[in-house]
Length: 166
Image 1: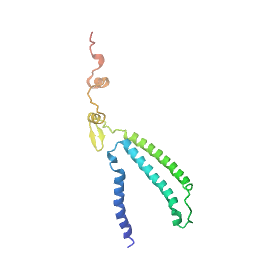
Image 2: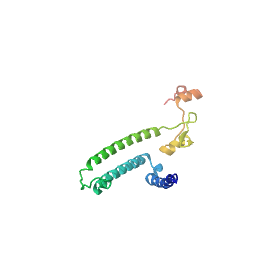
Image 3: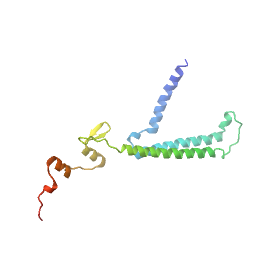
Image 4: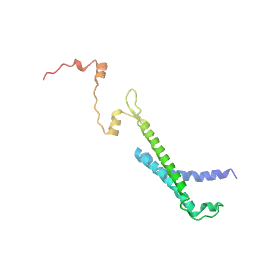
């Protein structure tokens, strides 16, 4: 019978965690990078605000007295030091999160390009360069030859052109 209690709690906890995950991170996949960064930092700030709220409520309600400590009157100075520590920790966590997001943004900036056809990997598909540029940067492309390729593939150079007189 003791073996079934973790299963029961697991059955209750998993759906709760799924609902919480959907609530907190709903639509983040469709968000742009800056919106995701703001959303994550906002969630961090809200979590730390809840910790600060708990610190002040525990002082106000006298939760320590419920755990056997002597009952003391509300003193607004007592929760100040833990609040300052939590705020310092919040600042550190937000700074580290920003650094991580800068690194992620930098690494996501790399494009996987095929060595032969120059197609670009987008998710699990390979998209031609022209199509990728048109979709992402709204750029129209035109084909041409650079002088080194014209010489290499066609034996043609700009020096071979007859000069046109004005």
